Structures are given as C-alpha cells and as structure tokens.
Image 1 (cartoon, rainbow, N blue to C red):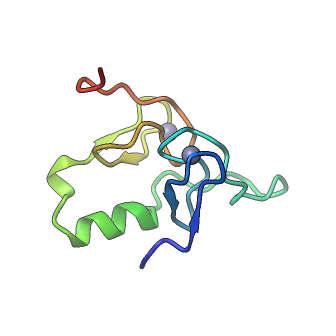
Image 2 (cartoon, rainbow, N blue to C red; image 1 turned 90 degrees about the vertical axis):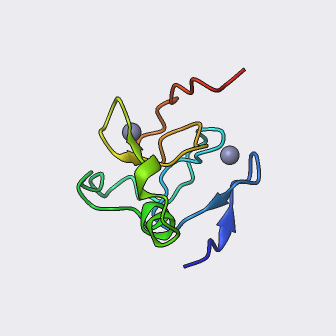
Amino acid sequence: MPADRFCDHCGTALYPDDLYCVGCGNATGAGSPASPPPPVERRSSRVVAALETGAHALLSSCARCGGEVLPGEAYCQSCGFRLSNPNAG
Ligand SMILES: [Zn+2]
Ligand SMILES: [Zn+2]
C-alpha cells in the first residue's frame, strides 16, 4: 500500500498509521487525542510494506516502545523516539 500523504515538515512519505514522521519525528496528527495509543503488537503498514520487499532481516526495535523500526528511519513512527543510528555522521 503506497503512502498517500507526506510530512509537512520534511516531506517524508507517511503511512496512514504513522503517528510520527520517521524522518524528523514530527507528530503526523494521525492519532486522535481522544483515542488511546495503538498497541505496539500491531504491525504497522510501514513494516508490512517493507516485509513484502524482503527487508525483514533488517528490522530493529525502538528502545522506548519496542515497536518495529526499519533501516534508515531516524525516528520511531509509533512514539517519535529519536533512534540511534550507528551509521549517522
Ligand atoms: Zn518529517
Ligand atoms: Zn517507539
């Protein structure tokens, strides 16, 4: 499923269930303030799309919420946590 919207801060493609931009950590406004946060067990559209391309071996997890994180993501899409990236310069 292709992304149908983009971060208004940095232009990164967003998935419908991304709560935070993975490029800059900006809140996407996907979650309603009245709703509880989604369970971390639920696999995000972003991860599902990546698995279809065979990227599962590269998955890591967010140190804060335990959500699945894809390579190249600077921020967790579930909680907005700044991810450590050993390759970042
Ligand atoms: Zn962004
Ligand atoms: Zn997280």
